[in-house]
Length: 572
Image: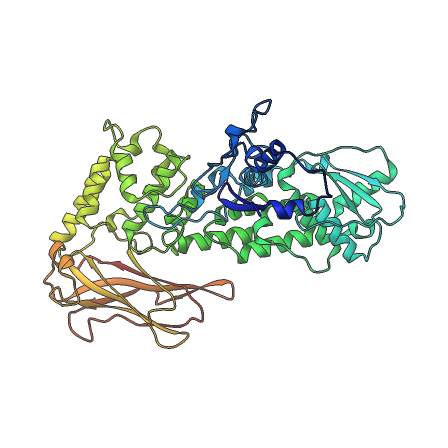
């Protein structure tokens, strides 16, 4: 029994000639030449040469093209270079590639500072704009009663097919009596369910009175959200998924479907995150939803630095919103330098809109350092629109010599601004820490912050300002009981790292009068809550009990918790 083995791509196949011929009716005996042709058939069909080809008379015409695959990417995919119709694997891969956006690869790139995942980001604003004129681009037609037709659609069908399958289940097979032409599809509906939408009811009435109304719309990007909106006409319980909520919101607004519109707003308010907060804010402004706008602003106030500042979504933040958040008394930051770094990164992204991943801070510094040194960036025409942003920062709270040197080198701030910062620092150090030029606690107190999650139970950090060292603390006692306070520590205390002690000035004053406030912010049952000591004044010594501040105690059932310590040294 002869058995031939050959390779096709990377798969090994075998052909048993005896088994192949066992199902064929008996034929007259073949001569030797015909046997040779039969034995060489597998080789010839693959464009190859059999071992006995020299003994076979040459076949007229060219041999079939060899089916060698070539690698089509870094994912171990292979395809034929000439794409024959029989190459099902290659066709499937090509179809899959056309369904994936160009930036999908970039969406999973890990940046220099933080993992960036943009799968949740979609062109929602563009989808919203596409619904503006939809009321003038729809048509209804009444359908005569027809015999019931059995239709079977897969879950991967078109949106109108999926909707038809759903409506048949809800109506128990009732034949549609209305056809809506919109977005390039014909949506078969039942008129008894259209009363929930004022626009659809009006279109239906118009179609009954004027049967020749035929206007179509060819906007395929939003048919999924439109299908979901139509589906909710048939359901007593509204269903809205977060992925398509912006498109469904726009559809509900156009169709004047108030219950669905409010459902979308509720979904958006409880699903705010880094990827969608800017889009949700824009939608709230567009449709005049003050509660949604407020929720987005509150989320940004506490997450601008911890989350949004390290994600590419930062570039979608509107200038006026950023300026408003920076002036908020509820703004959270780890320290004033983190706010400056976030603002610099935001400006970098505005100047480089094609950037697909968040840059590292060193990249931002290199970019601004490479610009012409004729004048500071904020004094140039392109930078003047950002002046208000940096006027909202508390630049006097940046006391690290390393950070001040970087600001000087990048030539970003005007020279008078840098001169004022350095002169304020010099005056404070010469006068025992007195911040004589910062008198307004609400707008000029220096902020430090901690973010609490489940673990660990104890958070502590050393801060330094004008030669005085403080330890800010947060302690979790049980599942929901927390304590927040700060205490002064000596410059020689072992808790202070050698690096901090070596590079920081030291004050030998035994007492220091301090105005301070401790504030904790968190979400409880979907609403933002604040716990605060209010503004206090205390003379901090280096020994107990004078070294410890008032303790802020709070019962907070959920995390994260954003704790801010605000300090100001008045003139002594």
